[in-house]
Length: 436
Image (cartoon, rainbow, N blue to C red; front, side, top):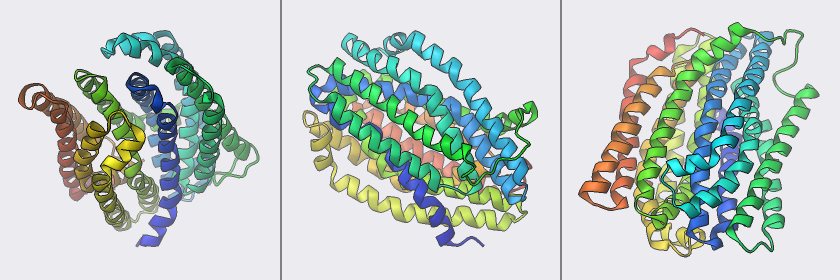
């Protein structure tokens, strides 16, 4: 059986990695927050757009994690490397067309979201720079996911620290002395692109020197069969996140109906809230890898035990974070949005109640994906993100409470319901019988 120590050992670097990546938008927010609600709202909308686009790459990331974990569990190292190489090729082939589309229609996306003209102007400046960063972002995610599937979460951790430190330094240097929000957004855009290039370069240098856990072999050619298998497993997972993100897109559109003050609170609140559950995401990565490798070795009971223990660890870490988030909401809001403290603090307090449910959902969903079960999470996510987050949020926000608080309550109920549904799928146990 898997020990708690084994899960924590693999999860801890992944937790820190996710926290460092969540710190990137926080650093941006701290850097440009003084320029006002329009700039903060532009940053929030731009991040939403990039997050949606990045989910296209999760089709490769989810697939490579699950298949590499199985091959390592089966002790087929050459097959694991072949999967890894094809995932990298696939990621590059997908990312370049996405980049081209974003660069062509960046301004139209903001207008489609019903953003005010001033937000469209500032946001387009930022997004037109970040668009060039999409292939780098896709490749970094694929390289890191393959390593995690093989059991190495430390190397992506070191790369993330390099990216974070570079980003922080460049933000300070480039934003110093600028006088307008447009100039500030342009500066942090260039800082984001440069730091991502440096982080990916470090990973590729290690790969070139054969220093990674997945060792190079002579079997590294392009295989359409393997690419199809990666997509067969990963596409439902990608669609799950894509559908949720489009729901989030609509959810953000609802928030914008209540003005830039509401959107500013949403942006700041989601930034700090995201950091508060990164330990759950890290545990999910560990559970996905360990469960996949256990199933590859034919140890189904151990795979189930990994998920069960992962949920316990996640719960014990995220519930205290919920308490801190609720009690310290005003203090956090005063730092991030000094002009919008009350609304931001209210958002944080409402969302703190989702953490116990989120702790279980993230880990169970991660374990199922590691087994190759990506269709059930897709169905659950589709029902909850659209039916509850958007549907219930629309009813409460626009017709019952007639306030943005109603939309936020819809978001809270989303994760409560999806946790109950994912638990039902986990208990049925069909995921343990999937063949990859």
